[in-house]
Image 1 (cartoon, rainbow, N blue to C red):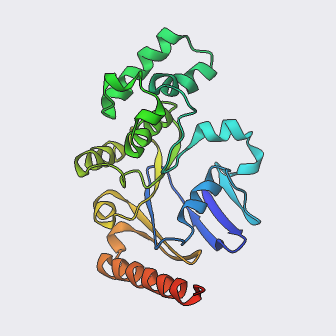
Image 2: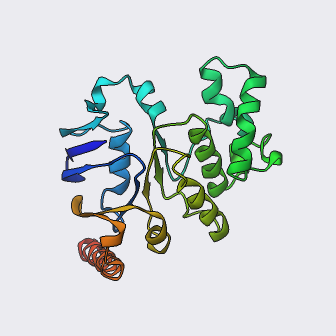
Amino acid sequence: MRAGVGIGLLLDRLSFAIAPKTRLAIVGPSGAGKTSLLRLMNRLSDPTSGQINYRQRPLTQYPVMDLRRQIGLVMQDSKLLGQSVEDTLCYPARLQGKSVATTRRVLQPWLERLKIPQDWLNRQATELSVGQRQRVAIARTLATEPDIVLLDEPTAAQDMGYAQHLLTYLANPETVSAVVMVNHQLELMEHWATHVLHLQNGKLVNYQPTDQVDWGHLKQAIVDAQKDDNWHDDWDETP
């Protein structure tokens, strides 16, 4: 995937490419445009200028539903369509006309891989925590076997043990061709990502292989940028 985009005041003149087997961490302070970038890559939003190419073709040349089967997106507060967990997980396969029995048989390994207990299956979305809903949404997306999976803060609402399990699973090149992950937990990204894309104020600061990243400098830059943003928010606040 290759992106060269601008979108209003959120993102400005970004240009980068993602090769197969890449594990890309998108990092930066709050409001930097990280989630906006994920939305562009899945066509939940379209750029106001420039374009994003997937397999040497602009995203706009793909039917949206076909594109989203190839480039799956899981947002931080995932929606489960008001269905039970089992119905949510089965939904993509049912859209493809697969029988209930076939769908459940295909689904079972994903429950084991992503540690989704059997007793969750009859629960409704309202009975799950944010982290549990996100775990189900990730399983639903990975079960469709996308070429690229986009994840927005998938470890933020998980305990550290499950976060490590998920990252280990996503690091397997046989799991998915490429993973793009917004994540503020730099201590996890340092050992998981192959590349790091640093955004600040909607602009690309750096796009580097992980072994070239100065992690101490990166962490301080994000902290300083966040402090500056908070200071401006306080200054602009009307008494």
